[in-house]
Every structure is written in structure tokens, then in C-alpha cells.
Amino acid sequence: MGQGHPMPTEHAAVRVVHKPWGARDLHPWSNIDGSGDAIGELWFERADKDAPIPALLLKLLFTSEPLSIQVHPDDTYARAIGMPNGKSEAWYILSAEPDTQIGAGLKHQVTPQQLRASIRDGSIAELMHWRAVAKDDVIYIPAGTIHAIGAGIVLAEIQQRSDATFRLFDYGRQRELHEDDGVAVAHPWPLRTPCNPTRLSADRTVLVSSRHFVLERVELPEGSSWALLAEPETWILVLNGHAAIGLVAASIGEAIFVAGGRTSIEVGSHGLSALIAYPASRPIDSLLQRLGETPGNAANPAAPAVPQFEGAKEART
Image (cartoon, rainbow, N blue to C red; front, side, top):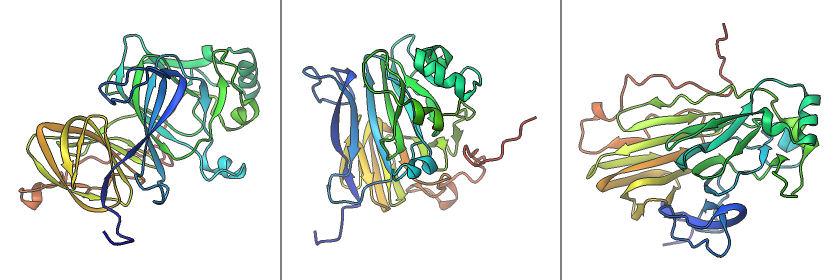
């Protein structure tokens, strides 16, 4: 390959992040051994360290203990304190033990003074809106949402690429808390953006459509062939089955980065279930086209409009 011609598709490299709340057995999502030091996160990154830094970060998280209660700033606040951007994120639950919970937003609105007091005395854990989660649930966490992930969960996270995290409660782990920044950026009220996955076609479901990224799930039948008309930054995470994406074979727990253009997807004998994420403010109609069909069947013209989360005017009666 000549210089300046990156491969359009590549196996994402995996960065291992050890965390005190992590897990030791990552099967079936990874064969990496966490028995020596618990692994909390696997980050998917461009294979070429000199490639442009992507706008989005795709991770897998493995929890054996609860994570801290935390909040992320929006772009405006992050830039005001010298960071490139804020952090909105979405979680897709890959597996959850019985009775596991996540926290998203507060049970009811509080004043900034009440929020500050709850961080100081630890009662913020009682203020959180905790809810049970199960496999295939999706949760959208816009910047400013106070949130937490419980123990016994494996999830995929897609986020704006940022490490701007303000911890509000940490179960006595002695890590630093960030009371002032946390109170400044937090929305001290219930989460107002429930996820309503929307079917675009028989094969595509939009899970999250936000200002910063779109997250879809695709279910492609065994032996089918597709053209992926990708945006310049498109991440694919295989949930089940396998496929050849461009020249790259991908199976469960593996991520593919597509640097735009037209790429083929040849689905294997067990079908393909995958997440696809890309930076955009609305789903791209022409993203995926089945080959061997008449053009009229390539997309579903009657697909319903996808609700926008941020910036959308919601009717409140």
C-alpha cells in the first residue's frame, strides 16, 4: 500500500484498562485474561497510532462492583475548563446478572444546594433513580446526567471521546470527588430523554439518535450480502454471528473501524447481529443496502421519523 491510502476497514486495536471494579473473566466477549488484575474496560482504537483521533470512543465495560456515581460536562463547560469537548454517551447492555441496576438521573428535582449536601454526606446514592436492566436494554446518558453502573453488568458504551468525568460518590474507595465541577454541570432532576428505539427497516433499528452520534443495531440474515456506505468514521461491534466486512473477518466482541466509503459485508452462516455507531445528528438512510435486490427494496421508504433527543422541541402538555 502506498503512503496516504489507509485501509477502508480495519480490526480495531484493543486497549485494556484495569479498574478496581472490573471483572476477571471476559468471555465470550474477549479472550484477554483478567485473572491477575481485574479488567474494567476494553477500548477500541484505530490500529494505526498515527491515524486521526476519532470523535467517538467505543468501549466494553465489565463490572464486578458498582462504579462511582458521576457526571460528565457538556461541550460548553468542557471547553471553558480547557478540554476539547464534553461527553454524552449511550449504553447497550450485553449481559446483566439478576437484580442488577443502573442509575440514571435523580428521583426528583433538587436544588444545587441540596445536591452539594448530598455529595458531601453520601446521600446522593439514595437520590439516584435506580432501575433494573436486562440484556439488550439501551440507555442514553446526555451530558449533565448524574449516572452510575451497578455490579454484574457487561455493556457496550459509545461516547464522545473525552475523559471529562466528575465523581460525586465512590463507595468509600478513597478516590477524589469533584464536588464543585459536579454541581456546576449536573442536571439535578430526573432523566428526560427516554430511549425509544425506532425500526428503520427489517434489518436496522435506531437505538439512539442524538446531537453527537447515532447508534443502531442491525440484524442481517445468514448468507446475505450488503453494501455499507459508511461515514468517514463508522464503528461496528459484533454482538453475535460473524461476517467479512471488507477484507476483515469479524466475530463476537470484535470491533471494526470503517474510514468511510463503500464496503462489502458478507454475512456468515449464523447471521450477524451488530451495533453500528457514527457521528451524525440523524440516521443515514443509505447506510446499508442489501445486494441482489431491486433498488426499491433497499430501504424502507415508509420508515417513521426518528425522534431527536437534544435540541428537539418536545411537546409538553
